[in-house]
Structure formats: C-alpha cells, structure tokens
Amino acid sequence: MFNTHSFASDYSEARDKFLAAARIAGAVTSRFDNPTKGPKGEMLSTDVARLGPDDAAKIVVTLSSTHGVEGYCGSGFQVDWLATIGAAGLPKDTAILFVHAINPYGFAWTRRVTEEGNDLNRNYVDHGKPYPVNEGYLEIADWLVPADFSEGGIKAADAKLAEYRKKAGDVAYFRAVSGGQYSHPDGMFFGGGGPSWSNRTLHAIASRFLGGRSDVAVIDFHTGLGPYGYGEPITHYDIDSGGSRRVRAFWGESVTESKRGQTASQARDGLGHHGLNRLLREPETRLTMCTLEFGTFDRESGQKAFRADHWLHKYGDPLGKEAESVRAAMRRQFYPDTDDWKEAVLFRGHQLVRQAIAGVQRGAI
Ligand SMILES: [Zn+2]
Image 1: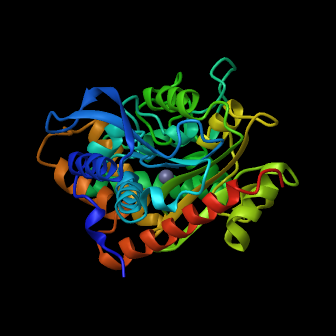
Image 2 (image 1 turned 180 degrees about the vertical axis):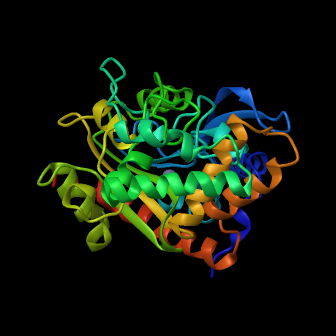
C-alpha cells in the first residue's frame, strides 16, 4: 500500500513538500529562480536535490514537470522516494538527483508549455540551424486555436479540421497538429525561437551535476498518453546503439523504442532525450534515458483541454472568470486526482528507479 500524501494540490505545496522531504532525507538542495511568477504572484523555481557521494561515478536522475502541469505526477513520486527510500537505497559510489519542476511556470499555471509558450519537448533542437517548417500546421493553425471559442465557433473550426484530416489522411493530420511547429509562438506544440529558460536550466544542472560521471540514468516523468495508470518507459535511441541495448538491460521487456515503431510517441527532434544525449556522450559518459509516460484519459479530451488552454492565453483572460474551468480540465487530464492512479504512479516509479540504480552498476553493456 502506498501513501498518496506525497502528492500536492498546487505548485507551491509541491515545492514545499519536496524541500521538506529532501531536508529530512539529508539531501543537498539548489534553487534555480525562474523570472516569472505564478497566478497568485508566487515565486517560481526549479529545485534540485542530490543524495549520495559528491563524486559518485554513477548517478540516477528523475525529472518532473517537463510539461508543466504533468509535474504533479513526478513531484509526488520524488517526494515519496525521499521519504520512504532515501540514502539507504543507494549502493556505494552511486548518487541520485531529483530535478523538481524543470518547467515551474507551466506547473504553477496548469499549462503544458513554458513561459515562452514552448513545448519543452520540441525545444531541444540545434537553434543555430533553420527550423523545420510544418506546412500542415500553417494550414490549420487558426482552426486549432480559433478566436471565436463559442459553441458555434468551435463547431465551425472542427468542421474545417475534419475537412483537412479527410484531405491529408490521419498520419499527416496528427503530424501537422502535434509534430511541433516553429512559426506560431502562441499556437500548439510550439518548439520555440531559441533555448527556453527551462532548456538552459536543464543544461546548467547537467553541467553542474552530471559532468564527468561514468554512468547516468535519467527518467523523465510525463502524463497523458496511454492506458489509465499504466507507466510506459519510452525511449528514442537508434536501433542497435549502446543506448538501445542499455534501456532493454535496465528496464526489460516493457521498454518501447520509437525508432522501432513500438510507441504512439513519435520519433522527432527536440526532445529532452536529444538535449541530454548531445551533452553527455560516450565514451566519457554512458547516458541511459527514458520518458516514463503515465496514461490518463483519452486523446480527444486531452486535445480539447489543451486547445482551451491556448485559447485562454491567446484571446482570453488567464486570470478572469473563464480561466477556472479551463485550468480544471487541464488538471484533470494530466493529473487524475484519484488514489488508484497515484498508487500506480508510485509503484511503477519505484520499480523503474530501482531498476535504474541496478542498471548503472553494470557499467558497459
Ligand atoms: Zn509530457
């Protein structure tokens, strides 16, 4: 039986619980202040807790809140690990690093995006190169986030989207919607016009805490894709690479690899996977990373919530009357507030972290 009290009801409570659990566990914490504020004027930061030897050659990392509001999930797990496992769960020469709320703006505002409107998992591209053009998105941008958000306005926009989907086909349609775009800063799945604050902060954390280690395992907690409560470890390594062999050795048969077409999550550039794999490379460091994706509700209700969120921040008043129901739908979609879902998150989270700690002991595979 798991204790679901480690989960919070807003960003500030999550941060307080995390820092309290870190202190009791004897972890060393660092704070990275975000320049924006939350909806109640609250201070926002990414907080880091490290436990284990300073110079450990092996380190396991968990990230929460890459997609803002999805942070309730990873935060709850991090607090529970610190409170129930702690230093006793670490073998010799092994440390653990918890990155709490890498996108604190999105967490506090119940959004998936960062303060720059970026989908962080489309933002880890090489910003020195021209951005890919998403032709499909250009065609449907105004229907995805219509100015008129009345029942009639949405109906008209949906008819246009259905027309486009029929013409382009399902695969091209979903690629147009969610493949990422670099042309509409207040649109959906915007990859950014430069490295966002969260991207730069993750790079600063990686340089400070992960440089020079021989073995690093990273688990990035997400929600919103797949069956309710199931945690799917998704990876993006090239087939037959060292990374691909290691993810299987670490996490076994339940790992899905996008390059083998085993997951609904598309293989595309700009993921945290690419950012960290560019930074931490063999032979100095063996990085083994997965996205741990917990299922919630169906894709249609997610799309609906996400669309309303973008409308609110583009055309509405994020602090006005209509904001409450928009945020409630986002929150339900990415953080089902039920004990059975939270228990499933804790069980699977502990399982994957335990496997990652055992995995980094193996060295070269
Ligand atoms: Zn996500």
